[in-house]
Amino acid sequence: ALQRIGFIGLGNMGSRMANNLIKAGYKVAVHDINYNVLKKFSDIGVDTKETPYEIAEASDVVITMLPSSSHVNDVYTGPNGLLHGGNVLQPWLLIDSSTIDPQTSRKLSLTVSNCMLKEKKGHWETPVMLDAPVSGGVLAAEAATLTFMVGGSEEAYMAAKSLFLSMGKNTVYCGGAGNGSAAKICNNLAMAISMLGVSEALTLGQSIGIAASTLTKVFNSSSARCWSSDTYNPVPGVMEGVPSSRNYNGGFASKLMAKDLNLAATSANEIGLTCPMTSQAQKMQVHIQTFAKMVMKARTSPVFSGIITQE
Ligand code: NAD
Image (tube, rainbow, N blue to C red; front, top):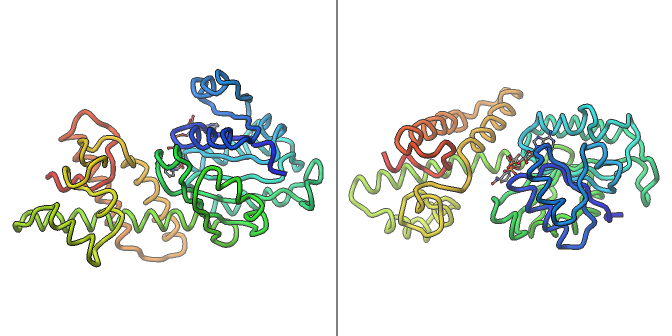
């Protein structure tokens, strides 16, 4: 049932994920509103489509990898969107791997499950949707080592697992619709806060006389160890191959971090939960972006990796 895959959103992440599906032998058709990226695929003989609806018509499974909720809504429910055919769908499975708010994932999942299938696929009576955002950046997308966190029907998750493993190396089933999105924004919230914590502690340490590299050695064999200390260290020169050691170029863009923190803040607000560290991280994020624009004029999209250490 997993033969024909439609892929929509061929940006930094999506183009690499689609390529890995092609390498794995799936028959893939692609769509993006950016003609240039589409052309790169048609040049190597990949089937390209003009609209999401044409993708739906030609696919058993459709995967979307788009910037944010509004784009996902457009691609699903807009004119010539995936659901353009009314409540009758060709694909039995729709997977959204974009980082979006759980509310939008849940709403779309319900809309999809209220549709019918054009032809019965195996024992699937109605189409299903999975929210399956990823962790790992462009390099993990390229190397097919992403982690997928998946919300929706567990049976559909099991059926789609080999598809995920063609693009990643870990999958975690997170529960019902929207729970993949919930997991993703909570993961990135914790990452933002631990990154800021490591940056602040390394700043203090350097200011009171200990070298960042020595302090990092201590962290990494002690209880402060985390991704920001051992894989993405924020201080220039402590680690090779990370943004801080190339003048904060490349890596996880600060504006993407802003988006993810806003998603966390919005989810918290909606249920009236106070998240003081989220608010603080949001303020720091704005500060980091402004600071980087002022001091490191060349770049408009700095990484979120503790630029405060350079102040
Ligand atoms: P990107 O901006 O590079 O790519 C998005 C693509 O979607 C673009 O090619 C754009 O033209 C296309 N697009 C936009 N609107 C469209 C529409 N209506 N129809 C068809 N195509 C449309 O973004 P990205 O870095 O690939 O990230 C995609 C998602 O993955 C985001 O939600 C992001 O938060 C998440 N994510 C990114 C990273 C990362 O390191 N870049 C890591 C994990 C998760």
